Length: 224
Image 1 (cartoon, helix red, strand yellow):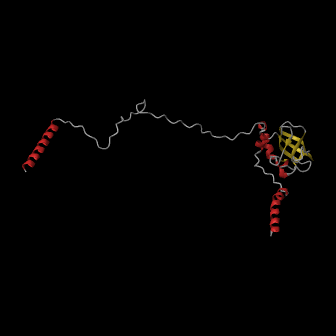
Image 2 (image 1 turned 90 degrees about the vertical axis):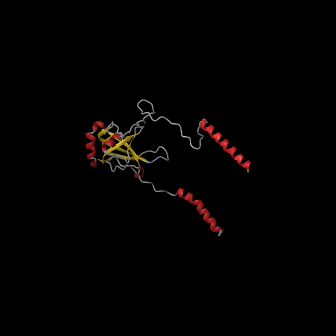
Image 3 (image 1 turned 90 degrees about the horizontal axis):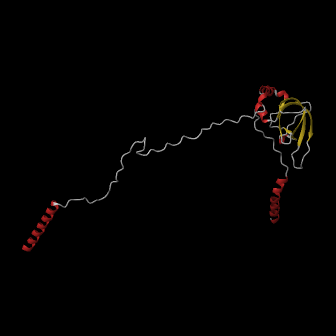
Protein backbone atom coordinates (compact mmCIF):
# COMPACT_ATOMS: atom_id res chain seq x y z
CA UNK A 1 0.00 0.00 0.00
CA UNK A 2 2.80 2.39 0.88
CA UNK A 3 4.56 1.50 -2.36
CA UNK A 4 1.48 2.37 -4.41
CA UNK A 5 1.08 5.63 -2.50
CA UNK A 6 4.70 6.53 -3.18
CA UNK A 7 4.33 5.83 -6.90
CA UNK A 8 1.21 8.04 -7.04
CA UNK A 9 2.94 10.94 -5.30
CA UNK A 10 5.93 10.65 -7.64
CA UNK A 11 3.64 10.68 -10.68
CA UNK A 12 1.89 13.84 -9.47
CA UNK A 13 5.28 15.44 -8.87
CA UNK A 14 6.52 14.73 -12.40
CA UNK A 15 3.26 15.69 -14.13
CA UNK A 16 3.91 19.51 -14.27
CA UNK A 17 7.38 18.93 -15.70
CA UNK A 18 5.96 16.60 -18.33
CA UNK A 19 3.39 19.22 -19.34
CA UNK A 20 6.08 21.87 -19.69
CA UNK A 21 8.47 19.68 -21.67
CA UNK A 22 5.81 18.17 -23.96
CA UNK A 23 5.81 19.71 -27.48
CA UNK A 24 2.81 21.92 -28.11
CA UNK A 25 1.08 22.48 -31.42
CA UNK A 26 1.70 25.95 -32.85
CA UNK A 27 -1.31 28.24 -32.92
CA UNK A 28 -2.59 29.28 -36.34
CA UNK A 29 -2.32 32.85 -37.60
CA UNK A 30 -5.35 34.98 -36.74
CA UNK A 31 -6.15 38.24 -38.55
CA UNK A 32 -8.86 40.86 -38.36
CA UNK A 33 -10.85 41.47 -41.57
CA UNK A 34 -8.76 43.21 -44.25
CA UNK A 35 -9.95 46.73 -45.18
CA UNK A 36 -10.49 47.82 -48.77
CA UNK A 37 -7.80 48.65 -51.31
CA UNK A 38 -7.73 52.41 -50.66
CA UNK A 39 -7.64 52.11 -46.88
CA UNK A 40 -5.02 49.36 -47.04
CA UNK A 41 -2.84 51.41 -49.39
CA UNK A 42 -2.99 54.44 -47.09
CA UNK A 43 -1.98 52.26 -44.16
CA UNK A 44 0.95 50.76 -46.12
CA UNK A 45 4.37 52.28 -46.77
CA UNK A 46 4.75 50.71 -50.21
CA UNK A 47 2.24 49.32 -52.72
CA UNK A 48 3.52 47.76 -55.93
CA UNK A 49 3.02 45.08 -58.55
CA UNK A 50 5.97 42.69 -58.83
CA UNK A 51 7.27 39.36 -60.07
CA UNK A 52 8.80 36.88 -57.63
CA UNK A 53 12.52 36.32 -58.25
CA UNK A 54 13.77 34.18 -55.35
CA UNK A 55 13.15 33.06 -51.76
CA UNK A 56 15.87 32.40 -49.17
CA UNK A 57 16.17 31.89 -45.41
CA UNK A 58 16.98 35.06 -43.52
CA UNK A 59 19.81 34.98 -40.95
CA UNK A 60 18.66 34.98 -37.31
CA UNK A 61 20.03 37.67 -35.02
CA UNK A 62 19.64 35.39 -31.96
CA UNK A 63 18.85 31.75 -31.12
CA UNK A 64 15.37 32.65 -29.88
CA UNK A 65 14.40 34.91 -32.80
CA UNK A 66 11.56 33.97 -35.11
CA UNK A 67 12.61 32.22 -38.30
CA UNK A 68 11.98 34.41 -41.34
CA UNK A 69 12.67 34.33 -45.06
CA UNK A 70 13.73 36.94 -47.61
CA UNK A 71 11.62 37.24 -50.74
CA UNK A 72 13.09 39.14 -53.67
CA UNK A 73 10.70 40.80 -56.14
CA UNK A 74 11.24 42.55 -59.44
CA UNK A 75 9.04 45.64 -59.29
CA UNK A 76 6.93 46.10 -62.42
CA UNK A 77 4.71 48.99 -61.26
CA UNK A 78 4.73 51.25 -58.22
CA UNK A 79 1.55 52.72 -56.75
CA UNK A 80 3.02 54.10 -53.52
CA UNK A 81 6.57 54.55 -52.23
CA UNK A 82 10.01 55.21 -53.69
CA UNK A 83 11.24 51.77 -54.81
CA UNK A 84 14.20 50.39 -56.72
CA UNK A 85 13.91 47.92 -59.56
CA UNK A 86 14.12 45.09 -57.02
CA UNK A 87 12.86 44.94 -53.46
CA UNK A 88 13.49 42.47 -50.66
CA UNK A 89 10.46 41.52 -48.53
CA UNK A 90 10.88 39.84 -45.13
CA UNK A 91 8.13 37.53 -43.85
CA UNK A 92 7.83 34.75 -41.26
CA UNK A 93 9.04 31.33 -42.39
CA UNK A 94 5.71 29.55 -41.72
CA UNK A 95 2.03 30.38 -41.98
CA UNK A 96 1.37 29.65 -38.29
CA UNK A 97 3.43 32.79 -37.55
CA UNK A 98 1.52 34.69 -40.28
CA UNK A 99 4.26 34.20 -42.88
CA UNK A 100 3.10 34.43 -46.49
CA UNK A 101 3.98 31.86 -49.14
CA UNK A 102 4.43 33.60 -52.50
CA UNK A 103 4.74 30.38 -54.49
CA UNK A 104 7.32 29.71 -57.16
CA UNK A 105 9.62 32.21 -58.89
CA UNK A 106 7.84 33.96 -61.72
CA UNK A 107 4.52 34.35 -59.85
CA UNK A 108 3.14 37.91 -59.91
CA UNK A 109 1.72 39.78 -56.93
CA UNK A 110 0.20 43.06 -55.85
CA UNK A 111 2.02 43.72 -52.57
CA UNK A 112 0.97 45.98 -49.68
CA UNK A 113 4.11 46.27 -47.53
CA UNK A 114 5.24 48.02 -44.36
CA UNK A 115 8.77 49.41 -43.94
CA UNK A 116 10.35 49.34 -40.45
CA UNK A 117 12.76 51.84 -38.90
CA UNK A 118 15.74 50.00 -40.39
CA UNK A 119 14.33 50.33 -43.91
CA UNK A 120 13.33 46.65 -44.18
CA UNK A 121 10.09 46.01 -46.07
CA UNK A 122 7.83 43.43 -44.40
CA UNK A 123 4.64 41.58 -45.32
CA UNK A 124 2.43 38.91 -43.72
CA UNK A 125 -0.79 36.97 -44.18
CA UNK A 126 -2.86 39.75 -42.60
CA UNK A 127 -2.13 42.33 -45.30
CA UNK A 128 -4.17 42.84 -48.48
CA UNK A 129 -1.36 41.43 -50.65
CA UNK A 130 -2.81 39.13 -53.34
CA UNK A 131 -1.92 37.44 -56.62
CA UNK A 132 -1.91 39.95 -59.46
CA UNK A 133 -4.52 37.89 -61.31
CA UNK A 134 -7.00 38.58 -58.46
CA UNK A 135 -6.13 42.27 -58.04
CA UNK A 136 -7.94 43.90 -60.99
CA UNK A 137 -10.48 45.69 -58.76
CA UNK A 138 -7.71 46.87 -56.41
CA UNK A 139 -5.71 48.33 -59.31
CA UNK A 140 -8.76 50.23 -60.60
CA UNK A 141 -9.32 51.78 -57.15
CA UNK A 142 -5.62 52.58 -56.67
CA UNK A 143 -5.47 54.29 -60.07
CA UNK A 144 -8.62 56.31 -59.35
CA UNK A 145 -7.17 57.55 -56.04
CA UNK A 146 -3.50 57.82 -57.00
CA UNK A 147 -3.22 61.40 -55.68
CA UNK A 148 -4.57 60.48 -52.21
CA UNK A 149 -2.66 57.30 -51.35
CA UNK A 150 -0.19 59.25 -49.18
CA UNK A 151 -2.99 60.75 -47.12
CA UNK A 152 -3.92 59.21 -43.77
CA UNK A 153 -7.19 57.38 -43.40
CA UNK A 154 -9.97 59.46 -41.99
CA UNK A 155 -10.74 58.79 -38.36
CA UNK A 156 -14.34 57.72 -37.67
CA UNK A 157 -16.46 60.76 -36.96
CA UNK A 158 -18.03 61.11 -33.56
CA UNK A 159 -20.89 63.38 -32.57
CA UNK A 160 -20.01 65.57 -29.62
CA UNK A 161 -23.17 66.48 -27.74
CA UNK A 162 -21.36 69.47 -26.21
CA UNK A 163 -21.83 70.85 -22.73
CA UNK A 164 -25.26 70.72 -21.21
CA UNK A 165 -27.25 73.93 -20.80
CA UNK A 166 -26.61 75.47 -17.36
CA UNK A 167 -29.30 75.27 -14.74
CA UNK A 168 -31.26 78.58 -14.41
CA UNK A 169 -30.43 80.62 -11.34
CA UNK A 170 -33.21 80.51 -8.71
CA UNK A 171 -35.22 83.73 -8.44
CA UNK A 172 -35.78 84.82 -4.86
CA UNK A 173 -39.00 86.64 -3.85
CA UNK A 174 -38.68 90.36 -4.27
CA UNK A 175 -35.87 90.22 -6.87
CA UNK A 176 -36.24 91.80 -10.28
CA UNK A 177 -38.23 89.65 -12.64
CA UNK A 178 -39.61 87.48 -9.87
CA UNK A 179 -43.03 87.48 -8.30
CA UNK A 180 -43.22 88.50 -4.69
CA UNK A 181 -44.41 85.67 -2.55
CA UNK A 182 -46.68 85.94 0.47
CA UNK A 183 -45.35 87.64 3.57
CA UNK A 184 -44.03 85.21 6.14
CA UNK A 185 -46.30 84.67 9.10
CA UNK A 186 -45.50 83.78 12.66
CA UNK A 187 -46.02 80.14 13.41
CA UNK A 188 -49.22 79.44 15.31
CA UNK A 189 -48.88 78.54 18.97
CA UNK A 190 -50.40 75.25 19.89
CA UNK A 191 -51.52 74.12 23.32
CA UNK A 192 -53.08 76.01 26.21
CA UNK A 193 -52.50 79.74 26.69
CA UNK A 194 -53.71 82.32 29.21
CA UNK A 195 -55.87 85.04 27.73
CA UNK A 196 -55.31 88.64 28.81
CA UNK A 197 -58.40 89.94 30.68
CA UNK A 198 -59.26 93.36 32.09
CA UNK A 199 -59.80 93.15 35.91
CA UNK A 200 -62.05 96.25 35.85
CA UNK A 201 -65.57 96.70 37.15
CA UNK A 202 -66.72 93.27 36.23
CA UNK A 203 -63.93 91.71 38.22
CA UNK A 204 -64.63 93.83 41.31
CA UNK A 205 -68.36 92.96 41.26
CA UNK A 206 -67.55 89.32 41.14
CA UNK A 207 -65.32 89.61 44.21
CA UNK A 208 -68.05 91.44 46.17
CA UNK A 209 -70.65 88.83 45.26
CA UNK A 210 -68.32 86.07 46.40
CA UNK A 211 -67.81 87.84 49.76
CA UNK A 212 -71.59 88.09 50.34
CA UNK A 213 -72.08 84.41 49.63
CA UNK A 214 -69.34 83.42 52.04
CA UNK A 215 -70.79 85.72 54.83
CA UNK A 216 -74.29 84.31 54.35
CA UNK A 217 -73.00 80.76 54.61
CA UNK A 218 -71.18 81.51 57.87
CA UNK A 219 -74.28 83.10 59.50
CA UNK A 220 -76.39 80.15 58.56
CA UNK A 221 -73.95 77.76 60.21
CA UNK A 222 -73.79 79.82 63.40
CA UNK A 223 -77.68 79.91 63.61
CA UNK A 224 -77.72 76.14 63.75
